Image (cartoon, rainbow, N blue to C red; front, top):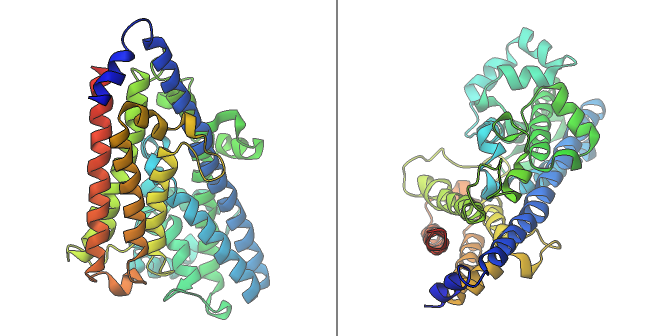
Length: 373
């Protein structure tokens, strides 16, 4: 009854325009304080990763390798915290599978290490472009780099890493950086650093919706206005929820569920660094950030989806908050490392918590859909 009363208020006595304004404010807060800083941090860390890898290739020191690995894990964390909004540029431009496919094709990697012509091309000035265009998703992105840097959850000994492996890692990291620049520019446009925009332009990477005038941030902020692909501000809000639902389901059903249920024992994310559980946890943090209207330190409770749902149906908002907390707690309680404990019964509790979060978020979209009708 609470939801119906709120929705009715939005449609009578001229209040519809005020409600639309509130929806637009939620969308703006979400773009500017959840998506923008997440992709900015991701772009910056992947840029630093290339620099750190090049420094380690020159020095060969363990301390420089340790620095590379720290930067890698920071970049990785920001990517996982972006997975509640894979809709948009990450999907439209194929960036998600390009930089985050697993498992790594180890046989193809070994063949590459025995391909002097390809290694020479990767070592060239445009090695990042060669990698992006010729290696294929099973050799690209985070997990190829992870394979070079880590073994059995530990940073490798610097002396174990060959120069050929470093040629590969630097080129793949360059391609990773380029695609993360593309994500950043696609969502924030001219607010991205000029050097990032120039790189994307030089590579002729797409950054606008349907090759039109709006970047992805503008497109979502202008939901319901001419030129936006979102028919209304409500459909924009529903897109946020759908993004959260998708990753909640993926974490439970696929990332944890496939290995746990015996469907695919090799479907284990981040097996070399053994940071799978951190990946799962950060995926739920991406939902938390989306729901509360910003990354930590940039939230505005009054302009969050949480506040909007709470006004619409406080009981439903409580369900969402509890489901997020429960998913985080159950994932945190999983035995580490996941690669050695993927059949542990406690994983079933995390799967159930993620599925429950997905179900509760479906209720949110049902409530929003009623308003749209």
